[in-house]
Length: 175
Image (cartoon, one colour):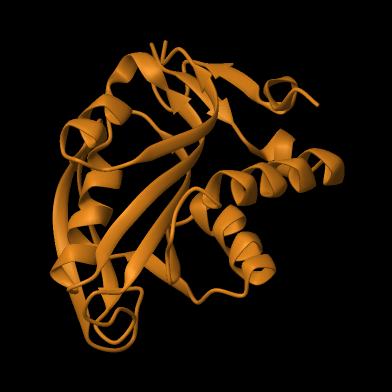
């Protein structure tokens, strides 16, 4: 099954000049979604990790299913003020501005190895912030797995330059 066939490309969204890669067409097809989860699980076998984290919100779709199948704890990395207990926070730059993500302080224990799953990597700012958030929590990022890599936007290269292992299921140009 070619998963690329299930990704819809929408020009000029969310702003002119952006070619948006839409995963809703992938997840609404039960066979394509199942294949996506199976491929993420296959790629995860290269790594040793104790917990799975995902970045809000589309990363939750994939990571929660993988967490369930692998019987690993699932950690939500959420936007600011969405978690009710004490949190670690990190601010970061986006393609279109700034943002903050947070994690509960009790989600990650010292030296926990964490696999981070997300739907897409573009410039890598959000992914790098997620890694720093895990590290602030005294955990270790074992690897990243992305469904889509917008390879020409440099996010994967940036993460790898910083010593992180990165896998993706499919690659698209960013524009």
